[in-house]
Image 1 (tube, rainbow, N blue to C red):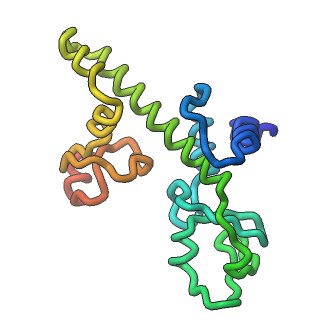
Image 2: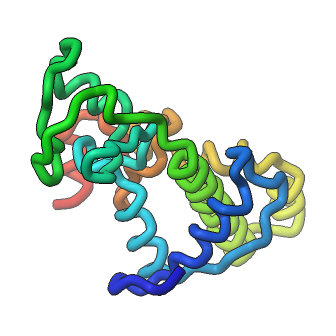
Length: 188
């Protein structure tokens, strides 16, 4: 594996894919520090070009080697037996039989999601520890589960519900179900 023009090393991904052919990640993978630019580039590489979200159940198109979410392909095309469609990216014709589940890509996406959650947890803990909370409150935070802290950190600032898709966050802590008016009011 080499480096792409976006700056992140594909060696990590290549190594992970080749060493985890059983499609499972170790319970405690070695920590890897990625810069913000590398994470952004990796996120872009793991994003479906149809829905613009991280891949969910990715399928590989054998005709052109592009991947898309299973639900995106099912929703955007009428798949009659033998019917040819054009790839959403390059328009190369293909049929449903030309696609297959992309287990390796799914494993990389899942590992990336775990990495992003761990980063969010680390940031929340850092903010709590550096805040003016007393020692008692710091101990209470340390004793809470990572899931509890993450849910609180990813709660919408308007309705206080937890986000279902934390990867949709873009610096503003509001969810898509809250009124646009409230969102705009916060940014005026």
